[in-house]
Image (tube, rainbow, N blue to C red; front, side):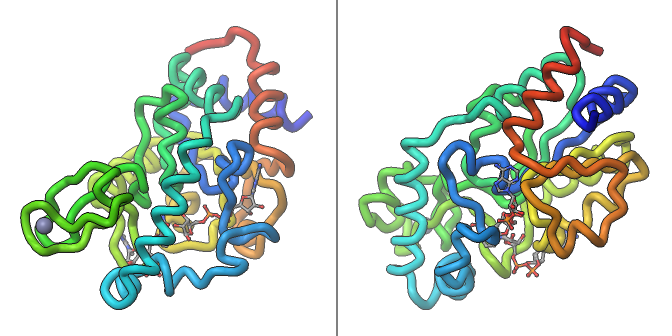
Amino acid sequence: MTAETLAHLMKQSNRTVVLTGAGMSTESGIPDFRSSTGLWRNINPRIVASTESLQKNYEQFREFYQTRMNSLNNCKPHEGHLILADFEKRGLVSLIATQNVDQLHQQAGSKNVAELHGNIVTIRCQKCGKPHAKEQFLNNSICTYCSGKLRPNVVLFGETLPSEAWDRTLHEIHQADLVIVIGTSLEVYPVNQLPSMSKGKLVYINREQTSTSLQYSFDLVLEGSAGKILADVYQELGDFEK
Ligand code: NAD
Ligand code: APR
Ligand code: ZN
């Protein structure tokens, strides 16, 4: 029933925005942050993923992100990522706004992706901003142009979100008549404000309801695995395209 309802809403919608979080990547083997097996269960993000950690305990910061970057090598998009890329091709999704930093949406073939929290695939110098190869960060190099520290292009706690991605998402959210939120606890500001900025219908796909998701009046809630639910919606849509 619910997958059929979502398929119906997608057919009716002229502009659909998908907002994803870490729950979209757990079926690719990447842990999320706040569920029972989440990363922040035994690591304090302020110690390893904040501007303070970059300045004051760079070795721990670098080790945290080197580990996460290396683990990405064994991860690939799962069926849910591929289905969202197919929906974009068929004119059923106009933008994926993601909090994820793994670039699995792009690897799956999605073209219009806004990386609201940046990514851990590309590297820059914290001081001069010049780009560097991933290997230089993994091999503990420092900037080749100045004495600066290298860091991934991820949005750290305390940093502002990349304005291009944020502005592009705001523009699409204001135009959307359907926003599908997938695999995020909606705990983190300002991304958690996005669903309420839309005049369109709101759908929540998540393993469970969270304290914040319960504050929204979603038109439809599908509790369960993102991959499985997207496969059911894919089935319901048949070969429909815009
Ligand atoms: P916060 O409570 O400090 O606020 C979020 C950040 O968003 C703030 O730095 C603020 O400057 C910025 N912001 C607020 N309103 C904005 C707007 N209208 N437009 C653009 N930016 C706006 O959040 P936080 O807990 O310090 O985390 C900062 C951000 O870094 C969060 O979005 C968080 O999810 C992200 N983060 C990412 C990772 C990662 O590994 N990808 C790790 C930690 C934090
Ligand atoms: N299918 C559906 N939902 C899932 C799945 C899955 N396979 N796996 C996990 N979930 C759900 C979890 O139950 C949880 O509610 O996804 C949600 C993930 O929430 P968080 O772990 O809080 O991750 P997210 O919302 O993306 O965190 C936001 O916080 O630390 C920062 O920058 C980091 O981008 C991250 C931001
Ligand atoms: Zn530099």
